[in-house]
Image (cartoon, rainbow, N blue to C red; front, side):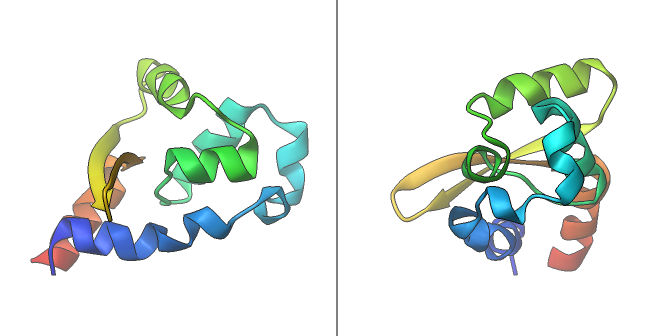
Length: 102
């Protein structure tokens, strides 16, 4: 199985997520704090998930800020149908997926 196939299988449910899927403490945190916690949980995040769950329209800007803070975040572009979008994850998670794909 290829890396992109593994990523795609992990994120297919992102479009059906909503604010009710956010953890209870999410309402007390900023979008950046929520996304940082989500990534630290070894999850992958897409712009659609960030919008649906955290109300974040500018995920790439938050990823930029988190990288400036020192987080090692990998961007993988995924194509589903005729749409291509970014998927972000911690480097450690990406390395796990690479091992799984081998």
